[in-house]
Each structure stands twice: as structure tokens, then as C-alpha cells.
Length: 387
Image 1 (cartoon, rainbow, N blue to C red):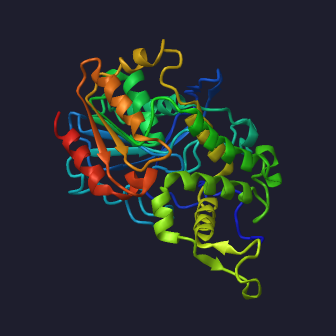
Image 2: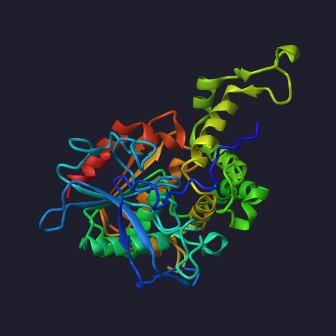
């Protein structure tokens, strides 16, 4: 059924409540990108928890995944339509204890929740970047985070932590700025995206590109219901399948039908199974809080992720890591299988750096790092308190 209430973009803008967000404006201090261009007037949205100590030695950077943002912890309220994505893991007395640690999370460059991205206003003409926003890489995201660290006067993070794309950022931090990372935790991620991981991303991008309401990326003036919501919803549905395991889908939904025409006994072409309704739900949720262009750009950055690029190969790149490292895999993860996290651990340990592998035993697939918090939290606490 055609929907008419979807916004052209779910991006946050300054007309909306800021919530817990803080903003760093870089002004004329341009951010250089891997594609050979620079961005000026960049704004970085970030949130903090806890208190930075006098020595500035207790700061932890948490890096978010694909459709995440700076809101790691805290209730849903004005400015934040959903609770923190690691609510229950970050906070007073929790695994990442904000009574002890000063926790920082920023929305990534190219994002849509306060940091400069394609839905942001171009400084030259006052209209959204849209199709003019350049391709970005995970390294570009980290370069922007370095500006934030400098602003906060954090010379060295006690730890840089991330799951999925957040883990990619954490790896780039430890490789590009080894003197600024005292410990490293990466969860459900990889050192190099594989062909299959790229293939999943390519399907989602094609879905958005083929939506006529995407308009080549320049859709921000579209009326309510006339933006590229169908393409973005399909892309999210494809991704959602990779985030969970076959067992979870089967146990939860089986072959149950959600709705059916009694006259055709449930065998009509468009009669939906329960699992289809679940996917519809996730597509609907994303449309209301995310931007299609940001989805494209961030997904492409993940596909381009390769710590070996320009560094003489994978082993040489990983040899730059000097921080004690925790690599966590998820037993049922079909998107980033455990061999990839084991390999990260092996490459770090090969150079005499302390490295530990831990595995989350869960049926929930890739999303387990957001769900099985006790299994995630215990190794993280051990890492943070072992330095």
C-alpha cells in the first residue's frame, strides 16, 4: 500500500531538538578526503558521558555502526527517537562505567544525525549537498574524529571501541594514530571487506538507485511521501536479513502467515508471511530516522574498507597496531564470520602485542553485539581495567 506520511529524508536538522548532542564546527579548517577533495564548514555532532579527569587519561571513544549515531546511551526523548543503541552497556556502574570513564561518541562524517553529510547545507549556495557530496572512506571518518579529539584535548584515548563499522573505525584509529590509542576493542568486524560483504551492500545500493524518487540524490525538496522511501526500505530489509541468523528467523516466525485472503486459502501472490511483516517494520523505522544518501555513502565506505590499502599489504598495516587488542566474534554471524575477528587477533599478536579473542555465543547473528550485552560487557570491562 502506498504510504504518504514518509519524509523525504529522516535526517536530523537544526530545526529539531538537539537532545544530548553537542556540536563542533570546524569552520574553514577543511577536512581532506581520500578522493582528493576537501570539505569545509564541517560540523561534528557528538555526545559525552561521565567526566574527563584532570590528566585527560580516562577518555574512551565509542564508534557507531552503519545506521547508528552519537546516541550510545540514554532514553528516547526529544531529539532522540530511540533509546541509546548500547543502552545497558554504557552508564554508571555498567560495563563501560561512566563513573570512571569519560565516554565520547560522534556521528560519522557523511552521516545524517548532526554531522555534515549529504542532507547538510552546502556552504556555497545554501541548499543540501545531495548528489554533490563526495564519496567518503572509513579513514575520512576517523580524520574528522581526530579533530574532535583535539577539540576535547584528548591526546590519547584509553580505549577505542566499536562493533561492525564501528570496529572498522577503531582499527583505522589504531593503525593510523597508534600513539593515540592505549587499547583497542573491535567486535563483529573485519580488516578488509570481502566480496560477499560487498555484494550485500551492492544490492541495497541498487534498490535505492532504481527508486525513481531518489532523483539522482537530489530529493530534499520532495513533498511528504514523495522521497525515495521504497528504495531505502528495501535496502534496509536486505541488510536486516544479514544481521540475524537462520535459526532466529525460523524460531520467531516459522512459516506463519501475517495476513491472507480467506478466499484463496493463503496462497495469493501478495499474502505476507510473518517474516515479511518483520522486514516491513524495520524498513519503516529506518525511513523515519535516516537519509537515503547517507545510507549509500556509509555503505560504500564499508565496502571500501581495507586497512592494507596504501600500506604495503595487510601484515604491514596491522603491524602498526601497538595497543593491547580485544577482538570479539559472534558465533552465528553470517555477515562478519568469526574467522575475520580471529585473523585480526592473530595479526596483532604476531607482532608481540597483547591480543585476546573472545566469542559471543548467541543465536542472534551479527546484531548480537547490540543484544547479548553481558557477553559483550565482561571482556570489555576486563580490557579497560587491565591497563
